[in-house]
Image 1 (cartoon, helix red, strand yellow):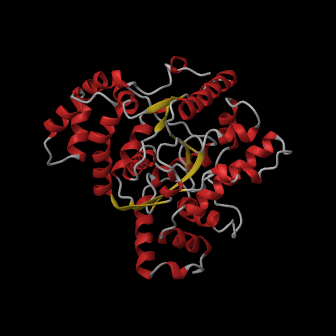
Image 2 (image 1 turned 120 degrees about the vertical axis):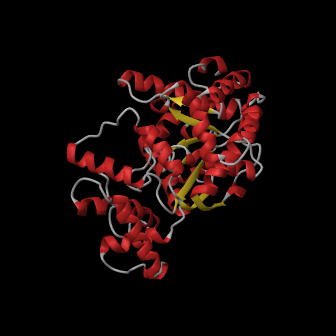
Image 3 (image 1 turned 135 degrees about the vertical axis):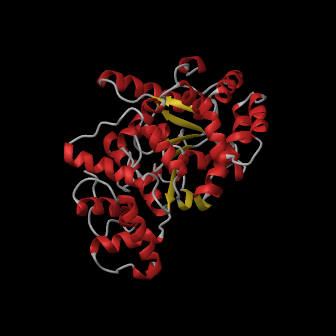
Length: 387
């Protein structure tokens, strides 16, 4: 039996810790810049006073995060669309396994939509690599984010996985609280959303009984998010290009922060989020006689299939595929004006990136073409690889 005290170094802040953290946040000069960008023209002192009198994570999300995300979407998107929330039941905790395109917004948008559809908000994974200072730690942990350790040697990785698995199961079954987690470590850099079997293996570590009992207890639900214009697209192409040139890529200390700010402030066009079918409805398709590794691979395949099926394809996805193949196979899905806008957008994004221009263009187009390739069952062959 897991206990709250077993996860002191992992868990979000408790309600008793919320107000002291908010006092630290509102006293930090960085908070002034957040208010100026996201709440320009509003009474900033009123916002500060509301936060200073907040004593629970739920109130923080209602008073600050909900309007904050709304402000971001109003300033940087052309609308948010959602489907599938009728597939989940209010009061039931779920483990949302999601494709990952933006560091902050993917999970933040889910919280807004959960609230709008009458559900409790979820806890959210928070990579230790993003915990760069006390301000960021406070802002994450008051927003129901829990720590996921990144890096370490083999023994440390195993211990961290066991602890994370235990915390996830405790949160779902004990606290009766939902969780958002990405289908793989880090954001997808090439548009090819794939669930890592290792993630599902981690989920299973804390289970008792057979495989299906262990997995069904977590109520896994695939979640698909798609942006008309990929957040941090140029940064993703640059990272991939440097990996191709150097064999590896080492992030600079402030790089994740730059990606967070870029993802929040860049125009994103339209955004769609769709809740897939809960995996518990499909577990019977997995043969009990298969090896554990095969079961995990099948479970990953079921997750991916739901994400591909529910990923909203925009004109740019069809345009990118046709540009890569130098044809107009999907010409009925876009207009000449759409194609010109996408071309101009691409040229602006890749301008100044160093490396072979054709390779850069191919990597850029792959980010948009790969979701179409996956949705159509790989009809054109393998997705465009990042490396």
